[in-house]
Image (cartoon, rainbow, N blue to C red):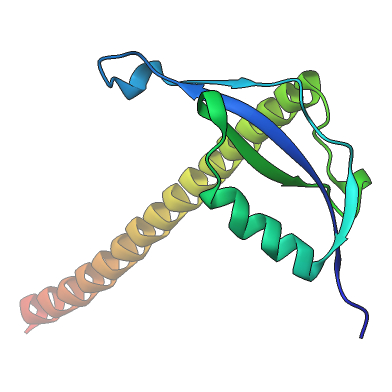
Length: 137
C-alpha cells in the first residue's frame, strides 16, 4: 500500500491582544512568510505537526501547518467573493430547511386536528343514534 503524501505549507502569524488580557480585542496578523507547497511523507508530517504545537518562536510568532486539499477543484472557496457567495447560498439553504420544517410541522398539526374532528364526529353520530333510539322507545 502506498504511503499517504501530504502537500503542506507553513504560515507564520502573530497573535496579539490588549494589555488588560481582554481577549475580545484578539487579533491575528499573518506574516508574509508563507512557504511554498511541499509534498512530504506521513512520518515527516507527524514530526512537523508535533513540533509546531510545542515550538516557541520569537516576537510572539506562531507557526501553523496548512494542508492543500487532495482535490483542489472540489475545494470551492478560493476568494473572498466566493466565500461571500457561499455564505449567502448557505443562508438560503438554512432558510429553506426552516420553512420546510415549519410546513411539515403545520401539516402534522393539521392532520392531528382533522383526526380529532373525525373522532368527535364519530362519537357525535354514535351518541345521536343512541339518543334517537332512546326517544323512539
